Image 1 (cartoon, rainbow, N blue to C red):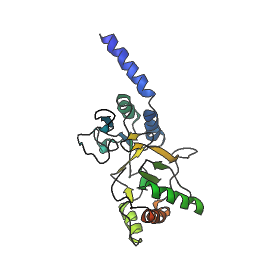
Image 2 (cartoon, rainbow, N blue to C red):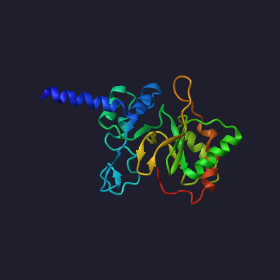
Image 3 (cartoon, helix red, strand yellow):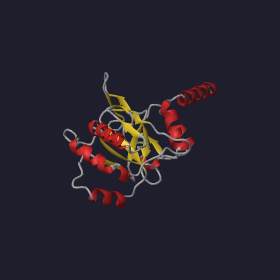
Image 4 (tube, rainbow, N blue to C red):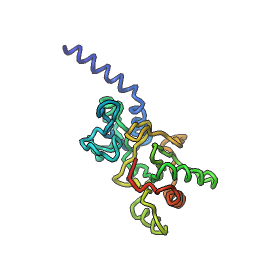
Length: 224
């Protein structure tokens, strides 16, 4: 019996090692030193319906939020990352933002596409951009609440649809699958060595505020 269990365990490890999410999590944690944690994930809710793996039947962000383990467990330790995604190979990949890790600014998908077009026309260099069917997120260098507050105080109005992922926050990374759909790179990370390059939040916030203000309905509901 022990031999059979051992074989099953080895098979599980091999299966986990082939998981695209495990490979992505290891890249983030070990090569880029970005702390990661698995998200709640999705489970069958009857038929083709997929609901959040957390206990809340009306979860606003199905699958794409921390649950067990909690966000504070996010780590760059390769052994822990392997254990998590070997046992849960389809768990969404969450980046714990802030500290020494990247922060992010997210906005509705329509506004995000408009903002990227503005940046491209102006020749402004961007870092990685994460896209879901509902929202786009621009990764930026870590910022403090004080720095962010100073930048936003300079704006006449900040749309409620613009979200900031800083210290104590998180962001779902590709190739995760959540309730709204697949998470992908609209602009993949570019690097020659070490971590991917990131812009400062001050270089992007003006255009993001303008794009969010002009986007249809403003996307006031929090939807990742």
